Length: 292
Image (cartoon, rainbow, N blue to C red; front, top):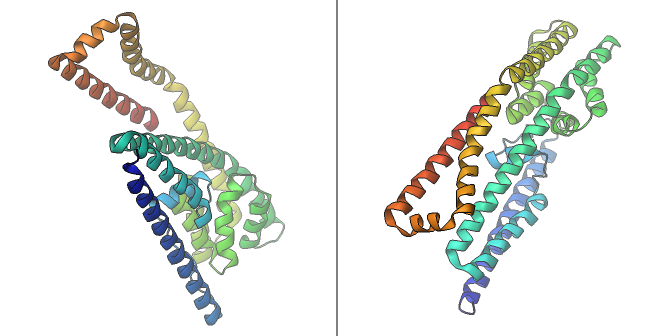
């Protein structure tokens, strides 16, 4: 461990240097864009296309700023360096892969829950816009009032569009940006309805009313499909759990049998192939369940 100490501190110093350089570059770009906007004194395009990781963070409801990403990155790197000092490179690689897998699963579960809640809250949001339009307000004003009254997580997601509108971006572009980030069909329909209304005019009340009906019909069809495929889901769950449970039972009841297989070259090959096929089958079943 003493021999690994210089390497450990060197990697830590390199990590901190790269992180500080990234923060300086990001801050400089932000100041430059704000300076240009201030000198022009007119409407500028303040939208910025987020990267893939930033999109996942935005959709999951986490802060994508420098401070928001700083401590998770430092914690992750510190854990890897600590494991590297204690268990070497292979241990750090395994722990790093496990941590990334846990983070990916956590973000995926959180993202699906947020999207499900947003879709459920969308009809009430659109109904609020319809009532504001009937009261004589314009479409942008109706959107602003509906956003302020919307519950989370829909309000937090629409906050990005609201900030764009306050900076001079049109309602059409702001809603298109939100639909592109979250990639929800209902939001794409809403963005298309706003774009058609802003470009070609038309009855916004009728358009939004039809959109509310479409969302309700899609939700009803989704619930019906989930009820029809309940048996398929249970069968897939049993097929995925049964081999693992059987292998665990055999290992607990007869550990010598597994050890003899593991110590034999051909037995080890059979066990590894079986594990790979089980992993592949579980992945395929999981993908199938997500598609229905």
